[in-house]
Length: 280
Ligand code: NAD
Image (cartoon, rainbow, N blue to C red; front, side, top):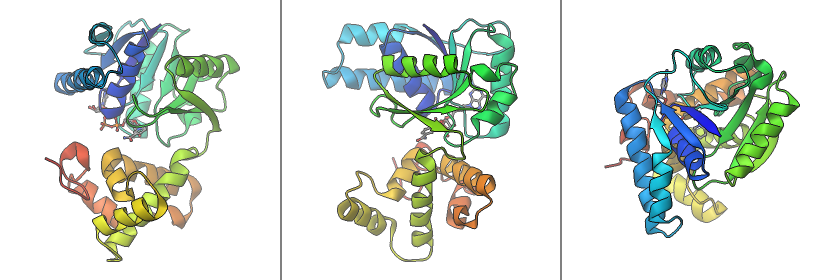
């Protein structure tokens, strides 16, 4: 299968990696050469780590890496059976990327979005092939997490759904079907919890360390909510809360002001070196 991945950040690079390891030919694109090089370097590091852990042979790692080619632009004519967009969580940006893919790819190609919260129906409607648009919501880190939330837009065809399910399973993932509602199931449930932890921190209920330790030791969560928010990216968390808030018109989804302030300051979590914690 020929797969095109747009966005080489933490999710796009992970998706490109698992697609290549499963034997697919992958083209990877990002908006700048620097971001693309950064994504490829992350894939290289992750594959090396998999070799060290004995999950993959050195030869397979090398072969997988060779299956990934850098694609500097998505303008013009492109060839792929499936394109997966994993650009930042913005409706405007995803609209532009999906429209460019729609124009550049053959009519039979399927367009998948890795959006965490945006409507697949809306994303499908900006293209001329809404029946071939689907949500494939991978989890972070992609090589380790088994779930893919498969989201049908109102116009997504059964053939597209079956294709995406089979593709996810060929990557070794478990695909769970979910309907197109803001935040789907994963982030409708997870993100309000993270947002509430931020309110608790902002209101002085406890330090980030205290809140995270309570949830880890008391509730058996593998990561504390603030640590997890840093890992996801605070810009992504804010974008998802805003989609929930706008999508349901319900004040219970109001994004925490501290989250807004941190994103405005460029404190995006692990990827920027600073969030609720500091990273070197
Ligand atoms: P990220 O910030 O790590 O990466 C986003 C990438 O998109 C960046 O490399 C950026 O340069 C690139 N980009 C921006 N504009 C572009 C354009 N016009 N063309 C090509 N590339 C462009 O973010 P991420 O965490 O990888 O998130 C990407 C998507 O995956 C978002 O929709 C997010 O909601 C979703 N997602 C994130 C997580 C998570 O835990 N972070 C989990 C599941 C899904």
